[in-house]
Image 1 (cartoon, rainbow, N blue to C red):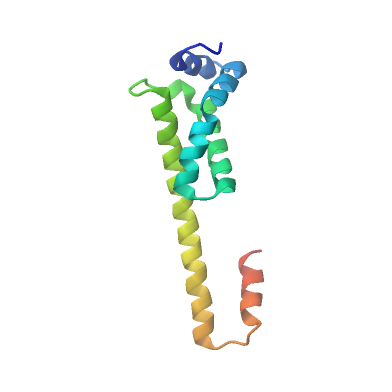
Image 2: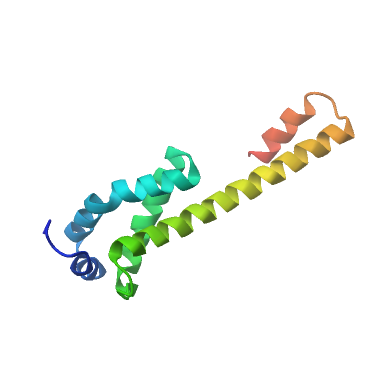
Amino acid sequence: MQSTPDEVLIGRIANGDRLAMQVLYARYHVRVFRFVVRLVRDEATAEDVISEVFLDVWRQAGRFEARSTVSTWLLAIARFKAVCRQSISDSWLGNLRECLAHLVRLRLPADAGGVFARWFFV
């Protein structure tokens, strides 16, 4: 199965073939990981993203239309997931900075930031 074309693997994955999924993962996980690390700049986040990518492949293999190569399809999914993850992260961080800046403007006691952080992260 190692020499099986990617398109055939996708068809088998669409039919629930776990071995085909293992082969596809083995073939592409390093490439996808390196691609995602360049986008998110964090290995732990990249690991999360590639897990989501290959889970999507498992769930959506039947929707692959072969308008591109499988590798291009995987990297497109990875890029979308990484950009979404980064947007959420940037938005969350921006909101946190804004809230902490507001606390500073209010001149709250020094421990108020800690109280806020405990409330915010619960």
